[in-house]
Image 1 (cartoon, chains in turn cyan, yellow):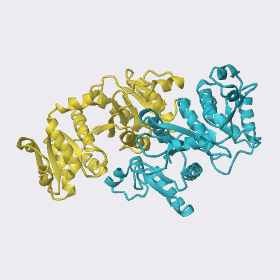
Image 2 (image 1 turned 30 degrees about the vertical axis):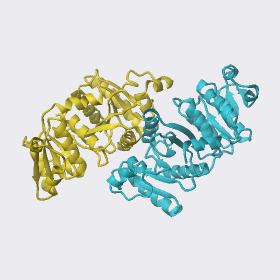
Image 3 (image 1 turned 90 degrees about the vertical axis):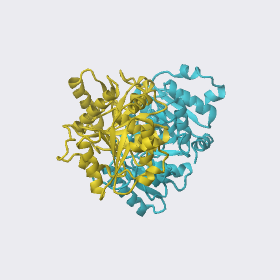
Image 4 (image 1 turned 60 degrees about the vertical axis):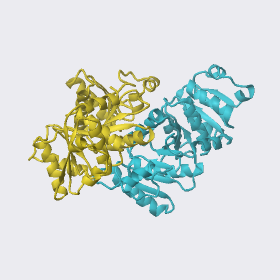
Length: 296
Length: 296
């Protein structure tokens, strides 16, 4: 699966996206691009008037009609009205605008809505890295801070489910550490080994390996030099990082030093939540919209 | 400071390098390149005969005379004879060949040699990343697994001393986390804040900031969007990573996905130790030799 194929498939899906705190140039730019290039419709929630900002973009009458603007009383209402719109079926998914991630997710998880699942939510970043031959998914780079083994199992399960929804029937997944053997002093290597054992029992068809260092995961030559016997080396679809710092640093390095494109979503609620970093480009925000459309 | 300037300066320094377990094509290739392009001499220690491998490279008589070959009885002697050669002044620094890092370092730290200092040893990787405007140092990506605050202070001090030896009188250093504020749930952010406080008191002239996320450290635009007031954003000389996994994953990503060159050394013993990854290219091993020559 190539990143561009996923983006293109997403473009053809009709759905309505509720945007929480949308009054931001970068967010509106991505919304406008989505209206012009996909079948998505939008409901924008903000306590600030946002008509003028939207009208400053060059939209046709028909395009403008695909954007519903809701001005709310205050931030609390912006968030609750936005989540409610998804809960009562007006919208199909949520996009995070200029609101704190934790505030938005806390609302989504409230008992009064029917949006929770049995699963823990996790963040999945889908990358197009020029130096890698296919799309690379990385999780969790933004939400679960220091996941234990059980939480990493959920993160891995969410990652596999996400990749399968996108069309990768049999994803190849690496559980990352800094080494390929188990060292009791390096908890990530112990976790990786146990996670792989768990999935080999629970999902025997899943191609999963770990602990693997990142070079062995993405480069076959590296694993040959290191004398590692791996079926997925150099060809992984997704990697699970040891903790938020390694994921976050990798994410930022790929964006700024590897010229990568990214699409980001929160997976594990009943609906996908489009969640990008404030410093991500509107191009990345647009890609996130397209990829999330595939996950409904 | 540009990476190539450091490499060029190192080339002019005369010194003798003891190579531990040198009988490896990649290591010998780097040694031969160093003999042809620097003023360094070598003593190669291995229990396997290595004359034939060395002679297979195209060396002149004078070049060959700058390489002393010592064949030892067994691996234990290879390691002890190599370290002894530095301890008794025959050689000025050590290069790691096909030997486990921990085995070599254990020998270096033995009381019978005079190679220990008061400091903890740490690994420093010096990068030339095409998308970054100057040399970027990263520590510790390979040695200290899960350093606590005190250990990170030593890692930071070693990093600063290394950068100053290379010629960066006033290095700009970022202590990395995944966020820019202190969150008690994210230990790396707590550590970073305390490390920065420590250095502001102990080395008031040092330009050090943290916690910083990697994007804010290496890109000014990212810190502006995030509304972070930083004097070093977009211009750091060195970063301290939260733990070995984030450093290792970043290292491998820069090599394989950002087309970076790297030079790696262990700093904190009386002599620098050239320590590269098995999967690093002989070009990187050559760069490591040149950079280590600046650190004697």
